[in-house]
Image (cartoon, rainbow, N blue to C red; front, top):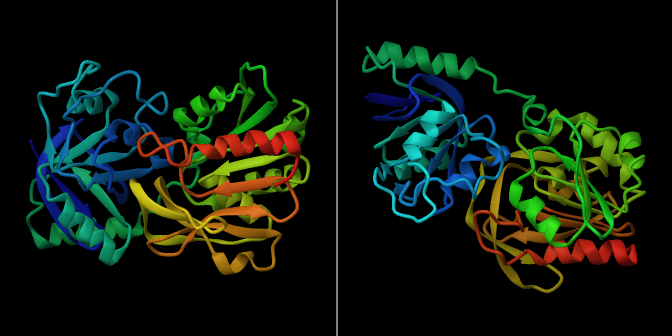
Amino acid sequence: MKAALVLANGTVFWGESLGAVGTVQGEVVFNTGMTGYQEVLTDPSYAGQIVTMTYPLMGNYGVNTEDDQSGRIQVKGFLIKEDCAAPSNWRCGSTLNEALASAGIIGLKGIDTRDLTKVLRVHGTLKGVITNEVDGLEQPEVISDWAKRLQAWQPETKLVEQVTTPAAYSIPGSGPRVVVMDFGIKGNILEHLKAKDFDLVVVPGTASAQEILTLNPQGLFLSNGPGDPKDVPWAVETIKQLLPKLPTFAICLGHQLTCLALGGDTYKLKFGHRGANQPVQDLKTKRAYITSQNHGYAVEGKSLAKTPLRISHLNLNDNTVEGVEHRELPVFSVQYHPEAGPGPSDSVYLFDKFSELMSRGSA
């Protein structure tokens, strides 16, 4: 079935329908990973977004039940160049197309995803719509109408509320009790926390400081999640109350919320960092790490000058802030994803750092 992607700047990409049939709007972003499409699809940080993969072939190892990062596909739409209709992998349970269709996710295949990526790099993240309703779409006035509607459309702002756990739950362990604030946590993060044998209590991202402290935690973990950190001011206030009381490790959205809670600022990147090959430097050791990333917002480095935070890591592509440490409290955070899933495992040592932090009580 013929289908198309229309961008808010009036650009149209023609292709074939993938997954479910219909029309869907979202912010169009790109991911540079060569593999890991299943983890990308099920990562709650992608809620509200239409994701394009720059690598040309997707679906070649199918979809299985083990690599999901959450209980469902989270993206609004999916854009690829070529779909493998006959995947080959011993764990394969379905094709990519079948998985998308079953989840009701609308996709598009057969487009030049690298050409689309060039458009996004020039114009920045754009609003877009994938549609199978293409009658008359070749006409300039129809394209113009779609573009105007997209420009007027406002993306969702309550994404964290949609992806957080609806109720607290426990993952028992023999180590220190760690409360995990779930803003849209990836499954692989929980696996790494479980591997440290922490006694985990995962709470909704909307939990109050008082509710968290009544659980008698010895540590606090702030998870990744979707959207603009300034859309969750209630989380910033909760974190502000908790940081002086608990050793804290934060990732991605949790990192941005930590910086906001301590007086920093955040801003929207032109086209974000998404992929499994982002170079980051530890400023203390000067060592470079290859990291997995997925974020459209970043911490403003200059805003940290009057806060108790020091920058610990920088992105080697654009010098954006990738990590901070508190100068006095046992608090640290990173913008990238040390748990990978997909991506390299260069930075899993940070989970050891968190464990040591709770043991000695200092950064």
